[in-house]
Length: 299
Image 1 (cartoon, rainbow, N blue to C red):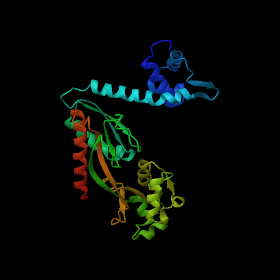
Image 2: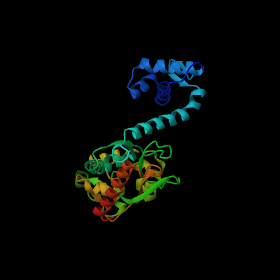
Image 3: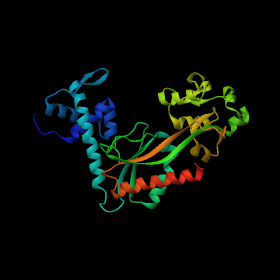
Image 4: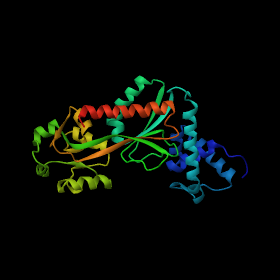
């Protein structure tokens, strides 16, 4: 190697690798296109290796670049954790907490819980990651996660907080125009909203009955917030978390005795962080909020 390697150069390399272009990396890092290019070129010079090949189609990572992705990604996570820890007061609930939640919950369920958190702990700042893929708590990619799957790793602390029921909902306008289904077989005469390509969601839908086959759905999307938005717009009947659907005055429950399935829900944190004041505050507030939500819905 010709010289010491800068972390800024490595960070630029990681951004290009993950974004797929200099322009995307520049937007992610908040720097100029030229700065990203110069940092990648500096890293290549320091390593004595070519990391990207240039063509009319853009940048293509070499085998050497792909091999460096995991260690660079781990360094980025460690840097983020360093910053969150450095700005936190050691003995009080203050600083940054990065929280991962499923997309639907991050939009429809979690915000009121965060309002409660902020009212009680105003010195805590939350970085909210919306993703249906489980975040990596072991490497401390996030500090706290809301998960629909029980964690298997022994290094994680988890609290089961809910078994959220799923039911059918449609807008009042839709039901006024099309009528209220009285029995499940009536759904065959209605417009249905459901998943597009998500295998687990499709399997769940098809177990309910032939009327929920993918080819019968008038609106198909794997985004759960998009499904509830389509139902609100009067496009048909959708499967929605019952507590969220019942709180929405624009929606009416269809076949109210029918529960499609339940979603077990856990709050999860790394055991090494669980007793850190800011992490404990977020963890405990989410646990208490889910318990209160369950009590209000009677489930």
